[in-house]
Amino acid sequence: MSRSIQPATDATRARLKAIAEKPLSLEEWRRRATIPLTEEEREHTLELVRWFRRRYPTAADRLAYARRAYARWTRSLR
Amino acid sequence: MEGSDFDEIDFFRRVALSGARALLIGRRALVALGLPLLTADYDFWVHVDDAAPFNDALYPMGFAATRAPDEARTKGRYALENDEHVDVLLARGVPTVDGVRVAFDDLWARRRSLTLAPGVEIAIPCIDDLIATKRFAARPKDLEDIRLLETLRAEDEVS
Image (cartoon, rainbow over all chains, first blue to last red; front, side, top):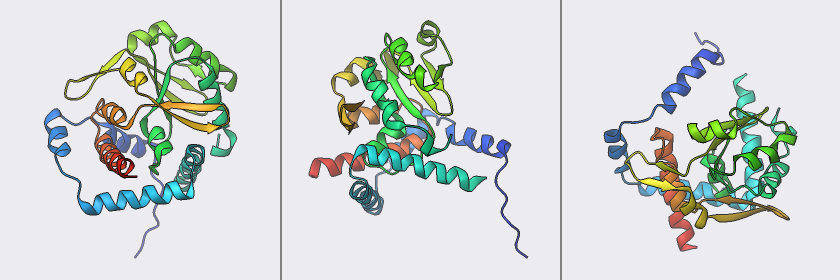
C-alpha cells in the first residue's frame, strides 16, 4: 500500500538544516578535501555550466534564474 | 515576497552606488559565474568601515540591519532583512578551517567585476579567493562548492 508524501514540518526542516550546516572537524575536512575529482564528476559539472551559460548568457540572467528556481522549489515544499 | 516581487537589479544598483566596498560571496556569486545552484539568501563581505553606507543604500528597499555598525564590527557579522535575507560578513580578515587568514583588502584588490545592467556592476572575489571564503565554515556543502569552483576555474583557464 502506498502512502502519500507529506511536506516536512518546520521542525524537521530546522533539524535537517542544522545537520547540513554543522561544520566538519578539521580531520574530516582534510580527509574529504583530498578526495580527487573524478572525470565523471568534472564532466557533469561542465555540462551544467555550459548549459547554464548558454541558456542564461549574462550574470543578471543567471541570478534571475536562481531566484525563480528557488521560488519554484520552496513552492513545491508547501 | 516571491521571486518576482523583488527588484534584484535595483538591489545591486544600490549596493554599487553606495560607495561601500562590498564583495558578493557565497552561492549567489557562484551562480553569477555560471554554476546553477539553489540558494536562499545573499552573502556579502563588506569592508569593516563601510557597513553604514551599505545599510543606508538598502534602507529604502525596506532592509533593516540586525545590528548597528559598531556592534556588528565587534561581532564580525550581521544581517539585513526584509522579505529577503542578506548575510553580511564585517571583518578585516577571517581564518579558514586550517588556520590561514584571508584578508578583505587582498580580496578587494583582486576582485572581479560583473556587469548586470548598464551602470550596474557587482564585485566578486576571483575564483581562487572564492574558494578561500568557502574554507571559513567547513560545512559539507562548502566542500561541494569548492569542487565546483575548481572545475569552473579549470574550464575558464582553457577557454
